Length: 168
Image (spheres, rainbow, N blue to C red):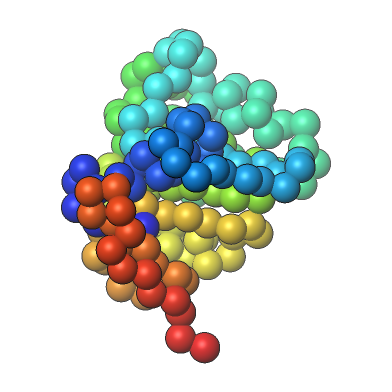
């Protein structure tokens, strides 16, 4: 999903995540579908918690969940630091790791490359290609979109102005 600031990209993702009710139409998911949203502004309610404890609470009971260190999104030195001391980018990467570790059926990413280094953005691009479920990305990032081979919606003023399907 692409478009300028204010085009409705985030609003669409929030509607898909069923956090906003659409003004018209409806969002339907199959029963039991898991949907996860990476928001642009990540807030952890307890700033004293550590990345390790948060990740384990969310994903530790799943035997197939990757270890937090295996995802490459949180530096080993930061695993036991309070999240309140982490930078905006570090908190965002932790939130992304928690979502990826949970392996939702649908992963909604709102500007996922914000606050990521080029190296991490490249790793994210690779990971998106191997995600087990559907991935919806809202981004201005031309670098991220340059190799995108999925469908593309371009929004302006909350309306789809262009739709491109992948070449078969």
